[in-house]
Image 1 (cartoon, rainbow over the protein chains, first blue to last red):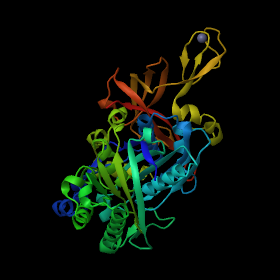
Image 2 (spheres, protein in one colour; image 1 turned 60 degrees about the vertical axis):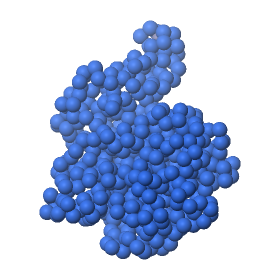
Image 3 (tube, rainbow over the protein chains, first blue to last red; image 1 turned 45 degrees about the vertical axis):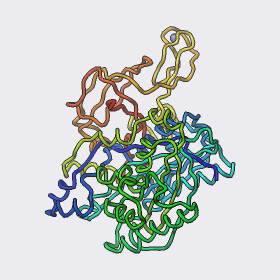
Image 4 (cartoon, rainbow over the protein chains, first blue to last red; image 1 turned 90 degrees about the vertical axis):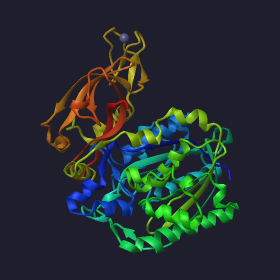
Length: 347
Length: 132
Ligand SMILES: [Zn+2]
């Protein structure tokens, strides 16, 4: 396989709400929630932000690092479960905003929290087949939770963008391989006209998240003949902090391998942006030669696994755009009433 | 501005999404939005892509707004002097008036302007935020 990341970019809105602020409103036990989910606070979109604006800033950061002409993008795919329109593509808005011209194929993808990694695989295929020169894959969300639902503590906003190309000399990281594990599992869903998703409580664990993440990871390790100890970094989808840590332990990965990508404790679950943002944070730091495992999870259900290897060019490119941590450090806390107003705006 | 039809706004997408104005070929003066005639008498222009970096010249907080912006109040509007020269009137986002200082560095970002009602088109464009 010959595909690599020639540019990557992140974006996280500046607003935050603390778990304790939400818990206070519902009379819930803050300590039990923070200990249970491992989420201290989550990101909240500004009143003028949505999946399209988040995708655009992440894409502009990816272009700043790729140093390519946006008109050389042959494909733009935006993965999200919160596209601004039910019918009208986010990908076209992004293409216009980054100056991609008109000669590119585009579509929005949806697969709960793994729509962004599915977009990444689509770009790999198009690049490897020679159909396009570069592809832009984005995972971004302004995820929704019904007020008072357990998801309210985790449903966050953010996104990450990756430009994929086939020229080895342009790679910041090679995507060595990918594989997926997919099934029909009713753990989390949202019908067309419902404003908020529903979920099957405890059922979201073993038969859903763990089964898919573990099976995709095992298949990826088998296919590449690699062991957990062969990786410098591992990023597993983070619906909360407990699930990825438990998955890592079951698979034999150690805290020093997953701690850098585990940004859920500080920003919550950014859905389609979640494991992609974990990858951007690792790319901000990883040394050339470092090997990275990324495993997404989307309810419904499926997991996409990727093995990446960092290339020397990353050292001179990563400083050309804001790092994921720059966005994580920029924050303004909201009270619950302000948070409610922000969330109303993105409907 | 908010009464324009979706089609009229669509014709300006390129300029508004990407901060593209023009430069007079006779004297080199740059404009945003693009002009058709320069005070120097020049009528020939070349497209100019602005960097989006600039300084905040002045600003004010809007507390009472037209209906389409009502839910966004309070928000800040200001005038930004782009590093390339032109002065642009725009919304200043990710900030309260109390956080801002005249002369501070700002940068262009892509944000939602407003929605044409519950079922209408969404309008996007360039705003400015404090550099961080
Ligand atoms: Zn002139």
